[in-house]
Image 1 (cartoon, rainbow, N blue to C red):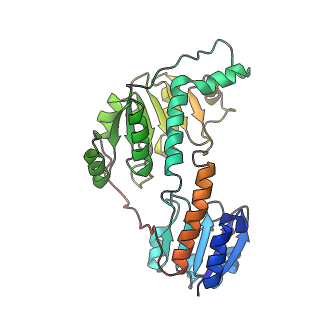
Image 2: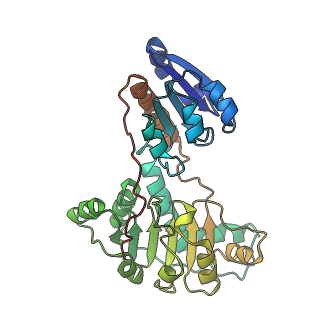
Image 3: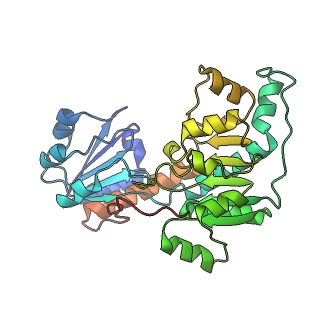
Length: 333
């Protein structure tokens, strides 16, 4: 019998009732409801004797080597998230602890969100809404572009990038792929997608969608040199981590009008900053506050997947186990 500790903001509402009943028939399960991550001292108290730690990113304690050494019985960590670059996977592996994530629970939602940002950037619908509400001057242009027959470069051909490519292709966009992973490039090519080096794709694209994961040694993917390759009427959409695009370089390029717009699923630009305020008011920056995954279907699907992953870990057969990423990979150029 394993001891499972679930730390989340929602407490028992994090898992479906039927899943909780099933877990409790086989294992000891404790729910800890918190609004933030516990510090090391509190984490040691909460996790004493735990075999499985399940948590959301917001409530996950920092899994430092010292904390892990204080939790000798811990064998599995289940994270309610897809990204795990903030976790020291090597430290976990060195202590015989696995890390499971939910790699597919939000794939479609994030891909749809990326497509939504492409539409919004092209149509300037976000700016039209602001102008209709009197938030921007009436003389600010709402002129946009059509996306049909435009070229979209998808940087990162994982689950989200591949799904976005399918959606965009169905709308008549010409889709190009970019990835540093030979296997991902091969899969895309087998599926009929042209795969280019980064520089060639940027020079060709009308729209660029960043859907890549963060890999040490390759951040940012789009810096000043890469942005300089884009056409002046190009748009960039980023549904990956903000660090994948050099914000200072992006701000400078937008202010010079070297590209037409940037949409990012985070809040990176500050309305209190004069230059940022200008870009926001003119609709050349669109920020969606890390909302890409926040969908009814994702929450329902995520709860079921979280429960299944916890049960598998508690039973000693963890699923979707990740390993440490390479420290450096050559970026496709």
